Length: 218
Image 1 (cartoon, rainbow, N blue to C red):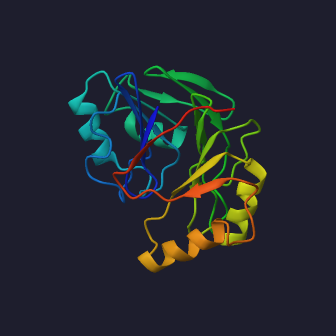
Image 2: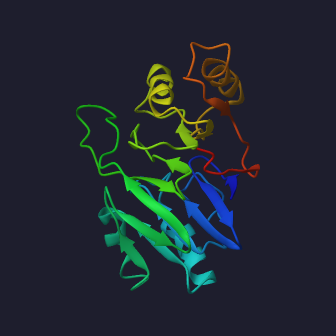
C-alpha cells in the first residue's frame, strides 16, 4: 500500500488501483481528494474537512463515497445522497476495498472553556492509524502511526508519551501545517534518537507529495 503525504493532516493511500484519502481539509492542496474512491473525515474542523475539496472529488468520480462521523455527515448528506456514511467508535467498514476500523469519540481538549466536539480515528487495512485531532490509543497493534505533531491542543511531551504508548514501528508526521521550517528540525530532534525516546518507533517527516510503501508488518 502506498502512502502519500498531502498538506497538513491529509494523506492518500493507494493499493490495487484504488485510492483512499483521509482529511482533505483547508490546509491541504485543493486537489487533495481528487481521484479518491473513498474519503474518510475525522471531524468537522476546517483544516480536516473542506466541503469544496470533497465536492471536487465527488463530482470527478460519481462512484466515490465518504465515511465520517455524524456532525460532518449531516452537512454533506443533502449534497451527495446515498454516498455519505456515518460511522462511530467500534465500527468496521469496507471503503472501496480498504478495511477500516473506527477508534475514538472526542476531540482533544483545546481549552476547558471550549466545548469538545466529536472526533474519530481510522485504522486502515490493520496497518495505518490516523487519529485525527486526538491522541487516541487504538487498543490494537498498528505498524504505521500518522502522528499529529503540532496543534493548539498538544505539547511535545504528550506527543512523545503517545508514541511510547501506541508503539508503532513507524511514525510519520501529520498535523504540521502551522510549523515553520526551523520548527520541523526541533520536533525531529525531540522525536528522534537525540530526544528522550519514543519507545522504539522510527520517526520520519514526509514533505507534501512524498510517498512511501507501508504494510502491516506485525
